[in-house]
Length: 355
Image (cartoon, rainbow, N blue to C red; front, side, top):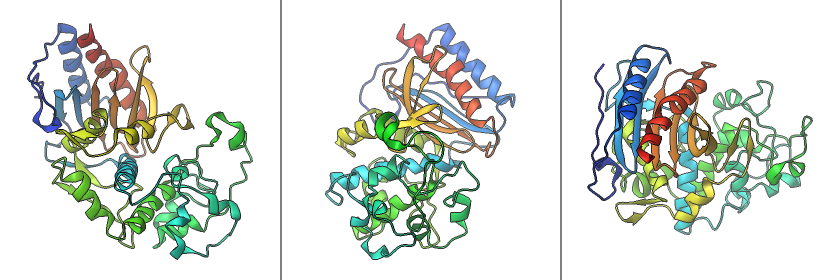
């Protein structure tokens, strides 16, 4: 299978400089080995892999009948759009802070079922960290707030706001945990961020995203998904080209800057990608996962993650940005596949450039 291995400054990443990268034999070998392994089907339905260092695209290839213009449904990868758009909304003064109470923007949603004074204290940050007190857990099929129960309801915002308070029957209470928060994976909470933003903007959130994020990054080819009531779906699912997903990673690596313009404040990017709580075998920021990669697991990275092993990853220490798209939806090995690609091939290949 033919793949692209380039050592030029990528125009798509929007950074300056003309330096060419040189490849060691081990670097070339690792990319060749990765490509042949993916093409062999070992990792099943991988659809694309893109790797860049400091904005230089080192590897780009597409698999399983996909190509450069294919748009990929990366599922919950696009939850992180809620984080990026929240940062821009704060920068522009539409929202004062992520510590604002959600009902500051959702007064039109009162009253709610299962009323509780503690629900009135839920903040935007609670949603971005998936640590709200409501009973919502996509990992527990018995949860009242499970995403599959939400998808069949027309009003997703009401679905979330009506949920009861969680009792924390297993494990320590949030106050007794590291960082004072308890993680519970909740797509409904991510979806609610869109309604909060749209209420704060007093205009359509999708239009805001196009004007303030897509257009500055020259992202023009995409399929946006919406809730049944027509609000941008920030629970996930919108479809983008792999090169455009790489732009989002590069934007974060550049601390919110693109072609000399500050698209998102560097302070927000730093805050969003800093650990706020523990989450399974990783850490979590504002809808960003945080985990170490490489054969010796020494490179702390942050990434957007979605069902099927989809990843949009940034490692600031190595200047590394990665996109892995996949349709291994529901495959129990999917995230392990992506971890192996990163640990055995991509990170070691980039390490050779540091030597």
